[in-house]
Image (cartoon, rainbow, N blue to C red; front, top):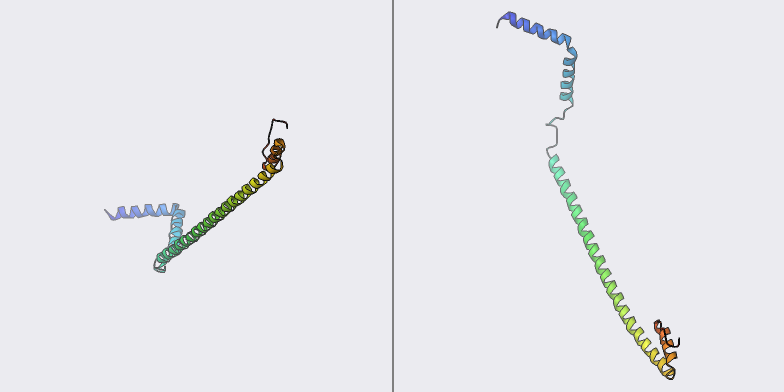
Length: 138
């Protein structure tokens, strides 16, 4: 390569730079902006990842604790519900037995009072039990 060819090359580059100076200025501004505004790796906290991991673990622990509390409360509510249902069923059975015994006593009373009138016995037992009787003399 001769000196003349090097001189010719740099004169062509200079001509291109003069014609397209906006591209060069734009590239220089972009490079300067990148260098000025990028985050420096030296000034950052080295424990950022550890802090994020600890925060995540605390969040997971809080979620697990609230889930455990919610589950225990739901179980306690289920136990209370089951015991209440059993108590109601037991009370209902006792009342039904008592009601059946009272009805049986009342039916015996009706039969003894109206032993000579079967139609009256039928009518009174029908009123007592709520069972409708059709046919016959009624």
